[in-house]
Amino acid sequence: MGMVQTEYRKSGAPPAGKATFDAVVVGAGFSGLYMLHSLRDRLGLRVRVFEAGNGVGGTWYWNRYPGCRCDSDSYIYCYTFDRHLLQEWEWSERYPEQDEILRYLEHCADRFDLKPDIQFGTRVNAATFDEKTNHWEVRTDKGDVVNAKYLIAAVGSLSATNVPNFKGLESFKGKWYHTSQWPHDGVDFTNKRVAVIGTGATAVQAIPEIAQQAKHLTVFQRTPNFCVPARNGKVDAEVTKARKADYDGVVDRIKSSFFGFELYFMPKSVLETTPEEREREFDRMWDEGGFAFWLANYKDMFFDKKANDVIADYLKRKIRSTVKDPEVAEKLIPKTYAYGTKRQPLDTNYFETFNKSNVALVDAEADGPIEEMTPTGIRAGGKEHAVDIIVIATGFDALTGPLKNLGIRGRGGQSLAQKWEDGPETYLGLAMAGFPNLFTITGPQSPSVLSNMPVSIEQHVEWITDCIDHMRRNKLSTIEATPQAQQLWVAHVAEIVNTTLMPTANSWYMGANIAGKPRQFMPYLGPEGVGGYRKKCDEVAAKGYEGFVLS
Ligand code: NAP
Image (cartoon, rainbow, N blue to C red):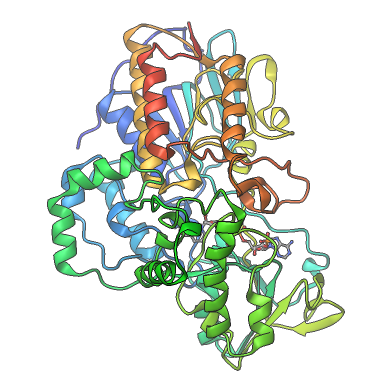
């Protein structure tokens, strides 16, 4: 597809002397790639994408740890805007591995000829809104200084790596790696004593793989997780054929669904069921694998602790029946939070791995927390564990971290990072008062990480494209959320989630994984999920961008 170039459209004179674009997009993952395609090839804008990695893919470029794969079914973990692409692309498995998803995104970048407009190996480190010209000045670590009318952060929700400040890490003489900055040529664990720190979705994928190769593996757990089997494998050819034949239906359903999946809560309270009836349903969801247990369970699971306990009990029994050593099983059973209030990891032989003779579990509660790294290992609970390699699977400064790292300054030079010191404040998770012409794709206070990401990404990209189109057609120069609309949205996000059990857990959704981060539930949950949120965003646009000031 050829690139459409248009003349720079004047609405607020562009500053002289610097490269000027209609839009700068930060990031070339799922969201940045589609944003570029949409603005350039649909609207004909001049777009520059800055990408820190040396290739496209975002999350799928950086996270290359063993076992890394998708947790959404592949037939819906992809772009849906191009029906030909949907029909042509063949996924090899239900949950493809990282390298296959990266190949898919590479294919998309080539298919839509996106790479000429992406500057790789370049990190944006400052973006300042110039109130005289109504343009953003964007600076990078490579010394670029460019101007753009629109700035679009397509930086992902889980891209700011969290390496906790472990005492003595610099003294460790072996090698250590964070899972989200994995070496491209892999890590050889053969004959090595390995430590994995963390038991989140990443570690749950990595631990069984590392245990197969390493001489010995010690897992350092701070909080145990409820896990459900992924049940990965080849998808039946007839199922794939039927899905492809009904892709329009599939796309309609996921767009109007609660979480962006073809999954729906059962319209019944678990407390109204007999033990036999619910056991049958639990077994069915357990056998189905994937997110069914989490996102298609009884309707009161997220609302009523008693109901939640009944559901959690099934998963606790599964851990007890899988892990042979009862002491280890007890350590692996979550006890401090309600099921589903932390992100559901999907596993392949995770609990089984703790039956292997070369695997040990060090639990912060029972055995004592990590105290320090030493030159030869990790000291926890007063005991030193000698290791050659440390795998740090401690996650991310989620949602706000990637945006705060961009060095954004809006009206009056106010810094976004400072403005968000007490927690994020956005309108629809798409825009912020005081930061005109800045859009965030899957930003905080949008469904983002509580949805199948490509569904939410496509929705935001299309909404932003329509909005910019509206601005151009009406010769407008700025769009900015009003403080009132923002305040109402922030209150609405909190009000909805406070009716659920979600805020009761120390989750990364709450910012609880990062020392000093304000406790605030960051994604938007409902009340009608991504379908209702889409309607709300469309209504805002239909009412002439209600809650925004356009000038
Ligand atoms: P995570 O869920 O935040 O897990 C980090 C783990 O490290 C937790 O067990 C955490 O314990 C522990 N930890 C953090 N700081 C620690 C410290 N100072 N000392 C000891 N332990 C510490 O991160 P993640 O596993 O990378 O996953 C993040 C998110 O990425 C997931 O929830 C998911 O949304 C996404 N993800 C997706 C996929 C997929 O779709 N395939 C795969 C992997 C990840 P606490 O629980 O006590 O904080």
